[in-house]
Amino acid sequence: MNLNADNCLSHDPSRWSALQTEICMNIALAKRYAFIAEADRAAELVRLGFISRVMAADYLHIAAFYNQLTIEYGTDAIQEIIADALSEAVA
Image 1 (cartoon, rainbow, N blue to C red):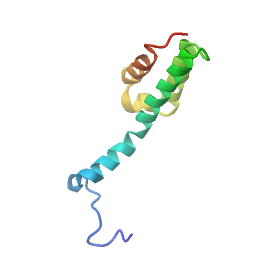
Image 2: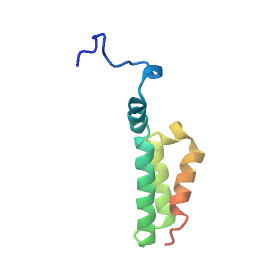
Image 3: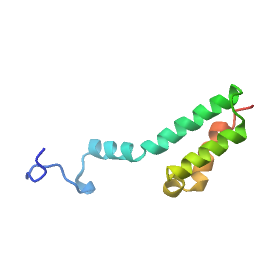
């Protein structure tokens, strides 16, 4: 790809197509989506009795911190994701 060509895709987000915007946003949100999936997986492990609810919450909080999700989305948003996933889980 010749990035210096006149017909090069714009690096200016205001000139992006809807598809280009969608692709960029999906990549930017991938860590959040992965975290939600892992929270659901941890909840399933709680339901199956492999780990306790407290352990699942601790693992998820540490993962969120390590991956800077608490910085990107805030502690309240991360806690809400964890609470939603674990709300039905009983160990």
